[in-house]
Length: 336
Image 1 (tube, helix red, strand yellow):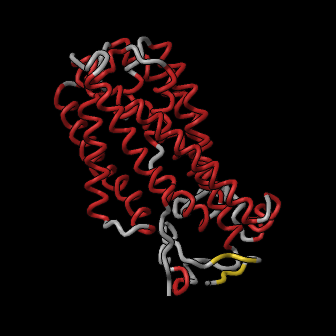
Image 2: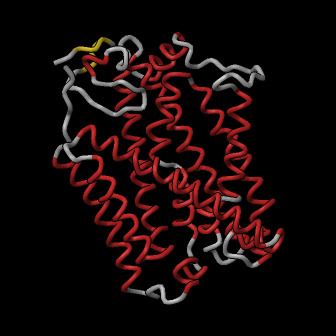
C-alpha cells in the first residue's frame, strides 16, 4: 500500500508566500508609480524596462512546470540525448537576435502580428493570431495542470480548487499590474526555480553517493549513450535533438509574442539584442539542468524503478509526483 508524504509548515509558507508576493507586485504597479495609465505603460512597460527583469522573465517564461517535471522523466527513461535540445537552443536564439529582432524595432511594431500585417496583410495577421491564441490556450492548460498535479500528490487540496486558485491569482496580478507586474513576478519565479533546481541537485548527488556513482550507473544503464544515426523513427537522437533546439530557440524567442513583448519593452534594439544574448545562459542552463537531473534520478533508483514498484510507491507514470513513506537504502527500496 502506498502512503503519501504531506507538506510541512515551511513548505506551505513558501507556497503561500510566493502567491502573496506575486499578488502584492500586481497591486503595487496598479496603485503606485506610473499606475499603468496608458496602453504603452500597461502593455509595453513604458518601453523603459531595465535589462535584469527582462532577462529573468525571458528565461522563466518558457521554462514551465512541463520542463521541470517532464524533462527529468524523459531523460530518466531514454537517456541524456534530450540534452542536445539545450545545446541547439543557443544557436536558434542567436539567429533570433540578429535576424528577426531588429526588424521589429525598425518597423516600430509592438507585436509580431503587426509585422505580419505590414508584410503580408490583415488576413495573415488574423490567421496567425488565432492560431497563437489556440496554441496558448492548450499550452497554458498543461502548464497550469502540471504544478497542480504535483501539489495534489502531497496535499489534500483537490485539483479543481488548486487550478481555480492558481489561475485566478495569475490572472489577477497580470490584469491589474500590466507587463511590469508580469516581469517582476517572473523574477521571483525564476529565482525560485533556480533555487529549487540547485537544492534538488545537492540532495540527488548526496543520495546517489556522489557524481562518480551517477556517471558509472548511468553509463551502465545506457543513459549516457548518443545515437548519431539519422532516423525519423527514433524518439531521441543527437541530430533531432539539436535541430529541435535550434527551431525552439528561434521560434520561441524570435516569433512567439510571449517573448517578443518582453523584449520590446526595452528602449532600443541594442539593449534588446544584448538582453536576449545574455538570456542564453540562464535559458540553456535551466533546460540542461532539467534534462540532466533525470540521469541523477536514474542513478538513485537504477535497482528499484519506482514505477515497477508501483504497489509500494504509488507511481504509475514516470512524470508522476507521488511520494511514499519508503526510503532508498543501499540502492534498494525499503518501505517503512
